[in-house]
Image (cartoon, rainbow, N blue to C red):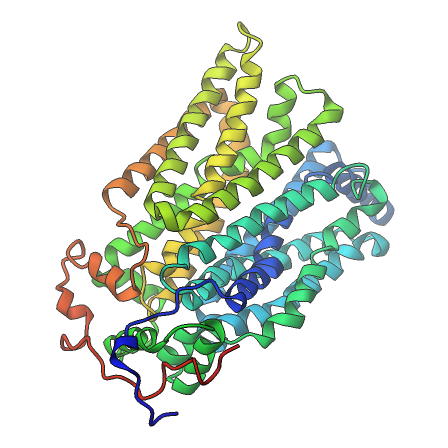
Length: 514
């Protein structure tokens, strides 16, 4: 095979079709990882009172101590927020893990955390140990912190450039799906009963089991295999698996071009990333979009949806069904963003999503202030809540993770995801703790703060972030070169971008068709 030359007219053809292996690995990686993040965000809402009662009972049994409502609220808040602490811990580990074990290898190894956390939560009631719930939530948070960065990185590296947007938003659909599933299973007719809440919390082990059984059979990221491991034959085999039609020659050449530009550079640490002037504006961009994503008000909406619906006059028995309805809207909005991103681009989805969320935050403030005079304004506030959720899921929910992969070359990508993940989880934790006090201090005016953040990120996207659709990683780096005051020639080795044709490496017609 190595001796056969490709025809000249086939050299630049890259397979751009959505193949079954690509689609399968995108759904499998997201199903056993990203979906669990969404599930764990929402799963503790329904059994909140049952968990508090369990804490109360065990404290009385073990210590003959009857806690007051304030202490129970603190313990429950710890149970909820410890997930974000675990997520931040997992994000700090991403850089080292993906460099050592690869992208797929990290996902496979991280599944052990889900089994440990799920078993701890599942048997906590039988063992009469509240600490098992809290520790289990922390451990599953570590898994989510790892997977929330690694899954988009993995999919971004295996996807052709014209499909990176579509595959990059598959995890965000699964996050929304996880929230929706948790809301449905938490209904009082299903697992939202006192005797079933440990089972509800431990269901995370089932999707992970499926992932663990199937994901090891898929290849590692070709970019990781070639650029970081230097394994040309494994790279070609992986590309042939994912590109069942067309010629992979040009794609391998593009990877080799990047490999040459990084030939004297090892994988960058977080400190090195923050000091590297060649990626200064890329770093600023991921800081802005990841903090803005969490401080946009979406977490406050998710945490306190029931209170808002209750204030809108929705009868108590119907609030849980209304909440499930918002979960369905999340899934639909996520799918809309996934299927339109390659048509409209990353920037329009980001800009439109943040602008729409900002207007809805403004709408909540106005409707709450006027609802005493105009009763129908209560329902306007409900509509604005739904609008914030829809606007978030269409663009801001998934695009920040996608562009983190696109803005950085192979040497900088692990550190970039570590920074992005830590900021994401830190902002998540902060808004969860600060919002109740913010609401007490500012009332409905607190949503004006969210409005300002949304508009600020939208403006930053308009003026700073370029469109990355259908661009190679090297092209995207060059787009930032002038803003970083770096000559484009510094980004490529000696200006020799055209590589020699690799004999036989691009043929799929005779070899490797699946």
